[in-house]
Image (tube, rainbow, N blue to C red; front, side):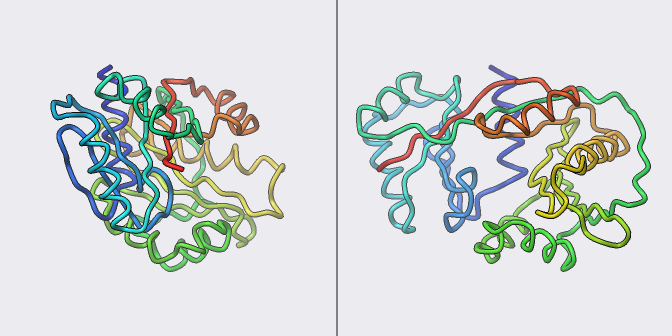
Length: 245
């Protein structure tokens, strides 16, 4: 239980909501609808108040901002009957994902073709929004989320012959190093660059003194899961969303 809670906490810090309300053990977040993680209710801690009232309040929090009500669920979500209660109220399960972790070995890599920024530079933002349609459509909220990150963050671009091949970001908190937004340009896919970029992020994590790397991947993304498994990542736990339809 402690490991899941820790990883959920640092994941919240790594990709925060812009508006946050803490309510009786629940963390309610919104960020203009950009990504489920930043626009969901995380029922992480002990809950004491009447459950149906809390669900109603969560719905009001989301609807007042023009958003669907989304709960991010794990096996330790509290209270324990919440998932069944949400299902009974018509919430459906969507977008199940796997959190994978890897203990870092300290292996070194040549990072000379990796541009590394400690703030989301104009070059990185331009590359990321060019490679990610969803980010391009939500550039304002992407910027607000990035500005809200408190732990140490890294924004990287992988280049080959001065051409941008892919980009990603990472956030370090204590001994943990989270990998996010690993994106390879359309014309460079199936050429091994996804693996190379991930390996170089892991080398960067070791260089910065982290001990454990983590990432999140959709359970239906077999290609990515196979890649990350080949690099030594193992499943730590799963999470899923309950969405009011």
